[in-house]
Length: 169
Image 1 (cartoon, rainbow, N blue to C red):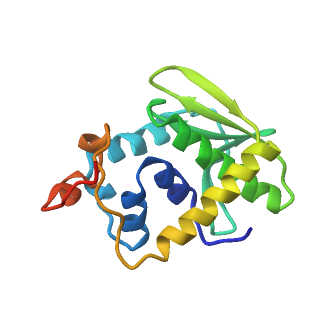
Image 2 (cartoon, rainbow, N blue to C red; image 1 turned 180 degrees about the vertical axis):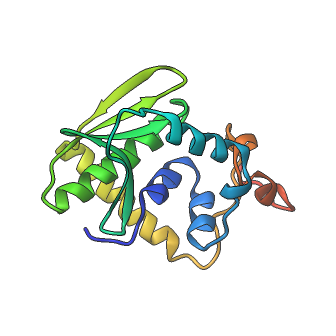
């Protein structure tokens, strides 16, 4: 499946459907948010020994680092482990479509742990389903209703979502 979906969109789909829709429509607040800036600094300082950091593939998606048979994604913590995993699976799938077979690593720097990811047939099926759901969501004329989630307070979209919105509990 070749789409114009980005790794960030796959990540946001697993985190918050509303955030995904807003981001995809050009409504972004990331550049002003402390947590995002912390992540950018983390990327610059993490794994200084890696030669191939921030690899842009076919002007389509950007991988944090490539190390031999692995694609590495660097994250602050594992609080969004499912979203992290889906993002890496997306990168592995995109690479496989281009004839490059890799495994994935997610490095959680604050926790000093690394998780290995492989694109199995089961994971590939789940990813394809998610990609179709993302496309369906992005076709909607209005964003999904606001849904209060445990991590809303740390989100760059917090103020936007909490401004005069009714909640879907």
